[in-house]
Amino acid sequence: MNDEIKNKTKIYEHSSIPTIIFNKEMEVIWNNESFQNYFTGIKTIGSNISALTRTPLKKKLQTAKGHSGRFYITISTKHSLSSIMTLLVFPFCQQDGFPEHFIAYCDDLTSDRKMMLRKTYLGLLEASKLKDDDTGNHIKRVGAYARRLSEECFQLRKYSAIDPDFIENIHFLAPMHDVGKIGTPDEILTKRGPLNDAQWLIMKQHTINGALILSNYPDKMASEIARSHHEKWDGSGYPFGLSGNDIPLSARITAISDVYDALRMERSYKKAFSHDKAVEILVESKGSHFDPELIEIFMTIHTSFRDIYQALSDDLTESSIQEVEDLPIYVEESLEEIVELPEELEEIGELEEL
Image (cartoon, one colour):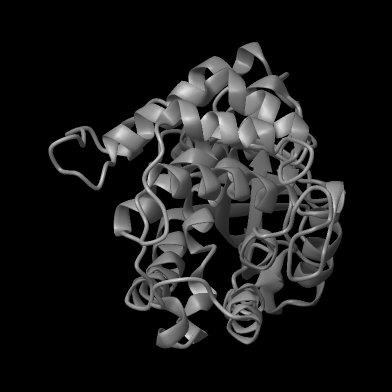
């Protein structure tokens, strides 16, 4: 970086607005303290914008009026949640032709976008609860179990698909597993006693209905869970009779979470089982209903499921004052011990011009 660039960057060094400067090849050559604070401990100079991002960004700026533009990009690292960043890009030095350097002001839109999106889908979840006899706490518990089991898989590095984004998403989306029941007739949902063959066929359709309802959610996990949480490891489940690893991982985790809680709850057709009895039933179904490796992991943390059930008990005399969201799940500070920090940010979404 030449002296002229260095002198001009001084006014941005302590700015509260995250700011970066990159060259005409879209390689970052400077960032200020605010930008660095978003990605603590990670190298951001040199190659932190991937080739996937650099190529379209360069093309867009070459044809944009004034070689400037407003873009957003999704970026993540292996040890933290992804962030959606807006980039306001301008030539850093006025000159003829394509600029040698650009300055970009960054704005993190992650929380605002997630809040708007999730409020919409929470409305659907509330509507589905009016059609079913499941309690609100049942839904919360399923999300908490799924998060806890996913967290343990992440700590053990058992599944490459599980990262902090997976953990956060399954916590929100596992409770949506039965949202398709909003399309199931009341006389079937509220029937006391066994369903006949025709009614059971209609009941099974809640998986397909749920997948359709959630198909527009930006993470495919949503529709995967709704569609496949009743599939079984041995292929005897529904709606498609998937087996083994053909069943999405998120659905396999949700299935364990949902069944555990269903066993603990009293229903019109069954009594409530104790924690030990519920664990026994889950273990007996290892390799038939449930992913055997996930059950092995579940067995190492099954007391966490018991604690979550008690913390969010439907019986107010047993429930804990502590909210399940406050229960320790994973602590980012400890992740450096188990995950090698990457040298660069990994861009995981296409660059999009706003």
